[in-house]
Image (cartoon, rainbow, N blue to C red):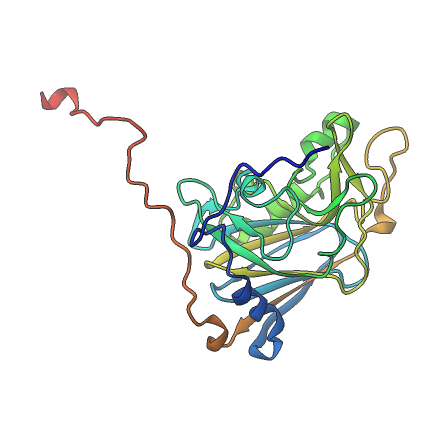
Amino acid sequence: MKDFPAAYQSSAGSPLAVDKAFYRGIAEETAGRTLVESFTVPIRTGRAWTVPAGHVFRIVTVEGPQVGDLNLWNRHNPRERLWASRTRQLQAAHVTTFDRLWSTLPYLRPIATITSDSLKDYGIDEFGGRIHDLLGTRCDPYVNRMLTGEDFDFHCHSNLVRAVAPYGLTELDVHDVLNVFQCTGLNRADKYFMRACPAKTGDHLEFFAEIDLLCALSTCPGGDLSVPLWGPDARDPLEVCRPLGVEVHALDEALLEGWAPPQSPPYKGAHGMTLRKPAWEG
């Protein structure tokens, strides 16, 4: 099969043309960082935390393979949040080092950039599976009820809802996720599949916060996805559920030289609409 060129092409100076030397320096100059927060997200739960712009945060498989569902918002404006579908188009359906996570309209800017990925060499497996998925979204209790007729309150959607409630957000703010450490693809029938997570203890995915972020992570109740969740062979995958670790690091000013938070595209149009006076003004 011939390889067809990507629809969205970067040009010199565009936000798609990532300064790899800058982000590589952040990943490699570990002496220039200070750990400011570290915690563990237990199995089948969620947790939210903030990351200031110019910091990095790392998600770690502390006890072995485990999938995590990640949401990101602008800390000061939750209407600006991760836009999974546009990130798929501008970057890839499965992301890795130097890929950027983009925000929703009308903001449209990179809000985080991946600086380090211990699974970057996984590539494509024999089934077409790849790691760190933007193809699918979070598991949720509504689909579960539809497929099984039962209620279960610890799907990733519910875990994220509980996690962000202390920050004043609701279920309506939870959005399509980055499935960290998840191996997925499309089969010959163009249907979504999930494979067992290949991560080992100590694997990580690390992000540079381009803006002040509110982050939320769910430890998926499917664990490492080695057990079928639906269908005739489905069973409770509790024994393959493991916690995930999170670290937040401040960076020395020297590592940030020349960096500034990205700006939104300066579109000033009104989408072709013309404003008219109200009828009572004549």
